[in-house]
Image (cartoon, rainbow, N blue to C red; front, side, top):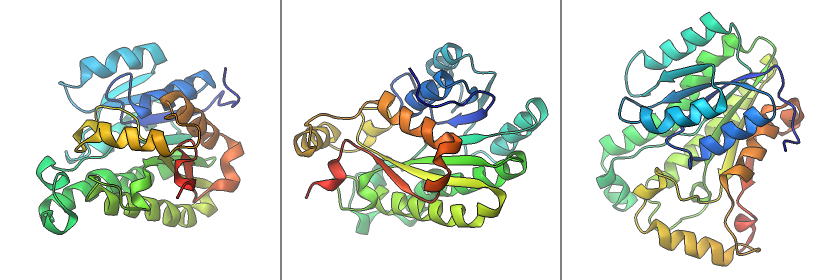
Length: 256
């Protein structure tokens, strides 16, 4: 049962890899609240894993999007403009770093790897914001997904820490830039979830155990719970919180 009303709103969800993705949990919450969705998939290899999720959601649009391919993001927004004519919210839930750079210390990561991680994980959110603005005629919500490693050093998170810190800073600046257009921006700092993307982090299972132990209720958050936060932020009720990093981690970030 959704506590948020998104009836009549249309949103773009970027970052579903399979039914266990944080983006999938968010998309389910959006749909349960009444929103109409456009869903992207990375490429042909990923499509069979994403299509069942999109079908379950009744996604009106199902389109490929690899932010590294020139013109593909523009094509997504052009189709949304052509078929919908408007957009109310965007969820950006993608991140990438070359394995060899992710699995080494920050001081040893390559310039090329760092640049790629920044482009895919951070700058793509800014690009999406720019393309979404003309479609958000009545205002809107821009959401991205971050992690506690942006605030504190998390073992084995390595270069993604600085990248997520840049993403969270981008949220604040976007919120200021777009305030007059009544467009909000948020980062959801989610607790660790065992997703396909997270599997790239070295010793991720050990990280899950540590977080579970330190979290006040000794339990990890689920994608459904994170989704409820995203649905709230997509609604008009989230307006006063623009520019914020909202923690959806069961209180982990509050424990020393």
